[in-house]
Length: 142
Image (cartoon, rainbow, N blue to C red):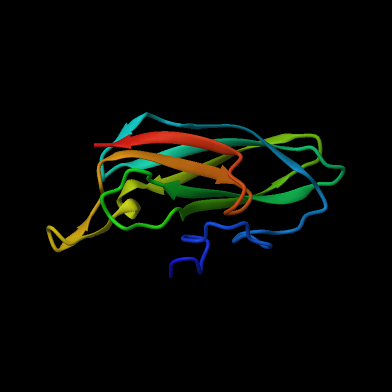
């Protein structure tokens, strides 16, 4: 799969995964998680504030991608771990609240011959598609 999907592609895609057209323009204002550290049994509550700066009401799909830089496993560069679609009226802002299960971060560990969540730091890349991270939230998994 290397170089073939958004998970492994290092170039600049013409149409990124999750890309969509809208009659409006959205600004990603802020993002935050409910706490800085999690266990594999936890669920992250991620809040993202999005403003409609365009002239029309419109739907926006907030997408969250997971990235772990210092992994001991061969893992994707990023992978979709959550998304939420909401209508945002023009000239107003909406709070998007997404739930992301830490257990979904698991990968196959050949050392234990089972799936596990690797401890350490993770970045949650937030934006309208796979190639446009506009905000980042960092978490630690113990």
